[in-house]
Length: 411
Image 1 (spheres, one colour):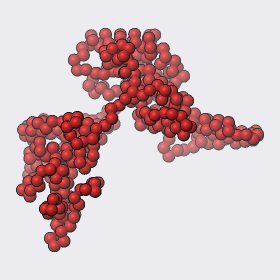
Image 2 (cartoon, one colour):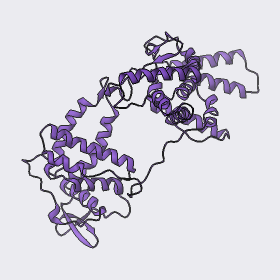
Image 3 (spheres, rainbow, N blue to C red):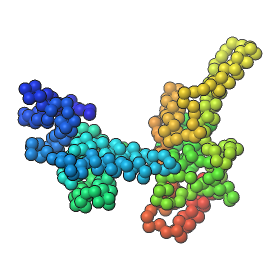
Image 4 (cartoon, rainbow, N blue to C red):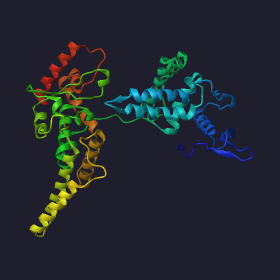
């Protein structure tokens, strides 16, 4: 566990062989030095210290083996989570997020009886995330919510008393301006000039992704998985329905209208197989090799002989056909898409161009701002695919008609 310079150290009391920590001049003994129990007790005592609560020996929770402990509860939940947080046979990001959320819970209270875990204990875990881990307020609220979800599941499985979960519900989320947790900067729209300046530095594949996302306001995870079989081209305004999306698990339908401008951008990529992804890193890699060769030839001042041209072509074929340790994937993901944009921004700055750093999600915010200004809040909601629990099927049909008209005019 990483510690700040001001954090009391985990030390050894040589006469007794016990681990100890000194808090405000008072020695707190933690158990046999180097043992798992002493490490857990140390983490718990430090977290309670940051909450500015007095640490008493009597406050240690007993861990009888006949009762369900937090570790056992988390282990039982994990067996459920590995089968629940799955999409298309693969674990979702929520499973990884749940793992991160449960780590401090196990670290601080792993051997504590689950029935003894209450709102003050959860507040101690939260303070640990603030003072020791240093997370932002919004992320802390998310992780505390995931911890509560584990206890809710345990109540449903009749593993713990309902009163435990109800007690945890009494702990409110951190409020803006009323906590020492740091705040994150809100995502702002990106100015068009900062997007336009890097477009020539992007491969044609990534450039098309940026232009499509800029015109439609799609999420990055939706635009990178576009396939021809998912696009209905029977009408003047095409309709794209991603085979998977953020709210699919809620049984919500996601329809993205594609107007004439988007259709023109997509046209060079529609010659692929129906079930193949439109935007492939393999195409971008081939373009990068061609671009490097072209830039090298452009800067050359001496004569190029035919034998050298043949040698260049051979080297190019070897680079294209070589067996790579990490060959390009069939499609971009959100991380590789974001990295491609970052590389282009770095190149632009090295060339002396004035461009701010931005990421793909900002394109969505830019489109939302435009739509709300030009067509109102309802238009922005339907074009961006924001789901609401009280939307009826009739209202959804009305919205998609409005979205088609907007796409016909400006998409």
